[in-house]
Length: 351
Ligand SMILES: C[S@@+](CC[C@H](N)C(=O)[O-])C[C@H]1O[C@@H](n2cnc3c(N)ncnc32)[C@H](O)[C@@H]1O
Image (cartoon, rainbow, N blue to C red; front, side, top):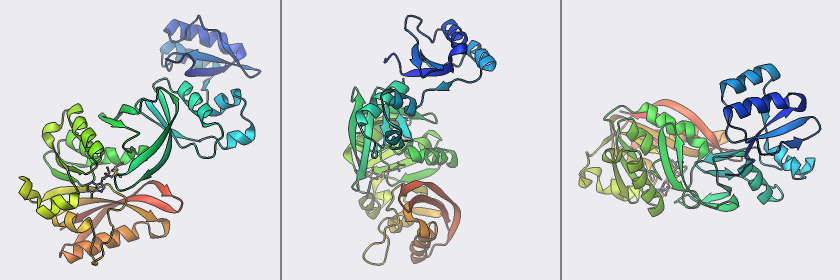
């Protein structure tokens, strides 16, 4: 473990009080010298975030010290104000990996080293490039650390094993992953058409749903199977490595499943894509497989001017073509997708 991954910064006159409390709680290594930080403050390296009673008492007396920011770290490395303006404002910690959009920042490896110092739980920092292709494969570059891109990310009680160099993980979809676990009922039959490593399948199966998960990327599929076992839900996940259109064209019943499901998740930006014949590539087979009264969760990357209108219109058009009626239950913005384009979800019940 890096010795200086986490540090608290306090004004010098009070620093000794804080050090005493930290030593008492065993989170400060007394053999290490206290680093000078600016003219009037001291950076105190600690081995874990201090959450202890004695520490809180000190904070009550001297005020809340602050954790060192990325800006603090880069300033120490000589970054100018102008350069700091280009430093990343946010990043994600996924298991043992820090994932950062490096943008126009100079000296990315210094950003990597600083982030590694700040995140004691991480051993690798990756710069995130574009995610491309229908398999949604990421392009990443190791900035700092051991370069181990395989990790297990824990979120809302679910463990997601993955290799960030091989498959995507979208930190911005966290609330949506939780929502899918919260929304299913025990015993419900659900179909995850774009399952990936189990982003939505796992929380739904853990909540008691019986899930059919389809994923065509072999690497993501391998993680999906491992993750079902990792979370102890393998008996509630029936996984198919296939194109969902092929599975649905055959009919779920030809695979020994019930012919329809109660709920379908379409976690793919192009889920509402029209086809060349006036229909919809994925919506048509999905609606066909949805039981009367079933619920569909449709994701889309939507231009801001068309937010909610376009995905709702497409769902309605596809449903009408199959003599089904649509009740929109909810609409959500998940995150920004690109300049002027939002990642949105529509939940709808189809009678
Ligand atoms: C965008 S990723 C999953 C995103 C995920 N829902 C999330 O929250 O981050 C979409 C997945 O669908 C898979 N996929 C795309 N088209 C597919 C198809 N026609 N059949 C099966 N899987 C497909 C891709 O390989 C990818 O793993």
